[in-house]
Image 1 (cartoon, one colour):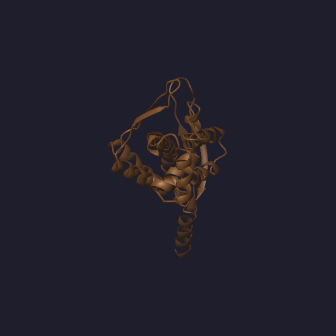
Image 2 (cartoon, rainbow, N blue to C red):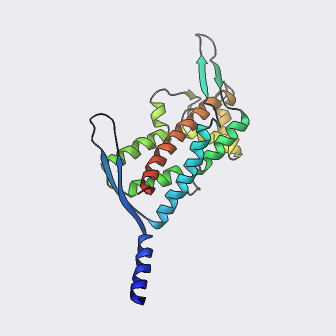
Amino acid sequence: MRVLSSMMVLGRIESRMSLTGTITFKFGGDRADENVDFSVGAEEEGTLRAYLREVTDLEAFILRGGVPRASFRMNWQAGGLPEFSGVEPSDDQRAAFLHRLRPFLLEDEATYFNRVRGVVARSSESAFLQEYLHHTKDRFTLKKSRGQFTMVSNDLVINSETALNLWLYSKEYHRDVKKAADLEEAHTITPIESSRPIFVMMLFEKAEAIRHLGHVVYKMLQV
């Protein structure tokens, strides 16, 4: 009985060392299902579970209307200066949104998007999953949205990771003086506030990427 008991305990310990399984992606129409084999270690599984908890909170916040969508318009007539207008969340709504996004946007967070995406990427050799993650990364880094339009002010691409991080680290998450100066230098013609609806739109784009990765993590943890 002692030997059997020890073997049972050892089996439980070994089962906690890794999470292994197969997840299935289903599509409409005639497209065949995609089956993806994966394996992650115990520590990585903990990271995935932490990520899923944060994604669940973020998704609930968005779905209950915690923050309205932003919009942006620009009018520019020949010989004149551009005129900008936009609709954006209130200061409190924006602050709540940024709070929910913080675990995914800051590099020193355990649930930083690119860190978790790397965990998922290393878990499988599936070409389908790697392509899915590549597209999800393009959305998070705003490469996908820049394919639709690019806005430049004084050599700074406003709808870019660089500009967004200048804003986040100088106006929202931190008060970095150097980054604030760089952001202001790019807004000599228009005020920084004119770009804020664009920054909020970019945050929504990142949130979609975060949720898409979360759906994969959810499938992995349900195995």
